[in-house]
Amino acid sequence: MIKYENNYQIPYDELTKMEQKIYDKQIIKKEHFLHSELDIKEIKSREVDYIIDKIYNLPQTIFYIKFNKIFILGRKIRSQLSIENKLNAINCSQITASMILGILKSKKLTGKDVFVEYYPMAEDERLSTFDKIKSDSQLEIIYPFQERLYGTNQVEKTGKEGWSLNPNKVIYLGYGEEHLREYTKSFIKPYIKNGLKIYDPACSTGQFLYELKKAYPVVTILGGDLSKQMTDYASQFLDYCECCNAKDSKLEENSIDIMFLRFLNDQVVSKYQAKQFLPKTLTKVKKGGLVIAFGHTPVLLTKKQFEHYGLKVESCIGYYQKNNCIFQYYVMRKL
Image (tube, rainbow, N blue to C red; front, top):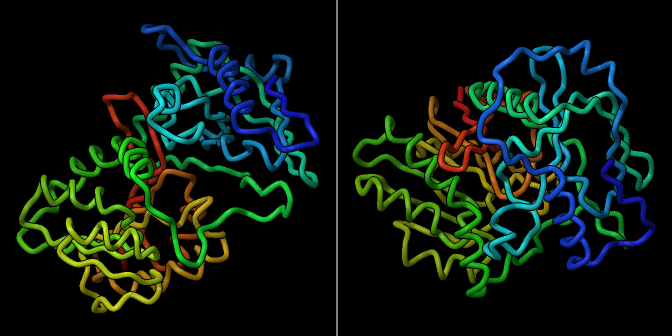
């Protein structure tokens, strides 16, 4: 049982220690496993296990994936980047086999109480399940709960001036998206052509776009950000950079070949804002152009919601072989 049945917000240092204990218990150390079909009926005959949390602790670590007519439940454990002090957060976007727990039975949020029931899997079953999931990019990772601030019960989101910039943030953001940069460089290779326009309306430090430019010098990289500190820093790396809200970009309509959306995420905007911003940013993309959504924290919109805004969703999951991990990576085409 994973249990945070407290009536106060757990301090970060204490939370990290508690998460390390969960990590030590949940981590799978096996390198080999038996490839066998899951006996769903047998798994569902087992004693139910629980996750009990408060909405102001770590509810955003809970996820599920619909797989072969069942829902596979998982919970993120402490990121290896956090353990190595390369991230100033407990979790990151990467999901590994150790984070698979079992088959979801039920989930609910009552007031500030998060309660999840599941049928637990053995280590071989968790490994086997992950091995199959990572091979199917059409599956979707769903995060059903958003963290809310302890005092206000509101979701955290970026302020009006955007994120402030300091040397540590540059370093931590760089470490946290290494797998995303490397995966993206490989993914976009078939689309590269002279003058291809790549746009990131929340470009942060600009490192993500700059890595693409270094890999493919023939592309044009364009960025924007709400924070003037960020755009001042990023401008030295990009072909074009503007300081504005994503919905107020001055870029030409229908001019972008590939747009990366890295801000429709938990702790960046609210779900309401995500739905407001998406259609306004899509106007910049050419018909048939690619729209790719991912981020450090969970993407707030689902495949069904993206389709509602006229996007054809081609895949939902990315897989990074070096770390043997999956992550949300929505690849969509503008119709």
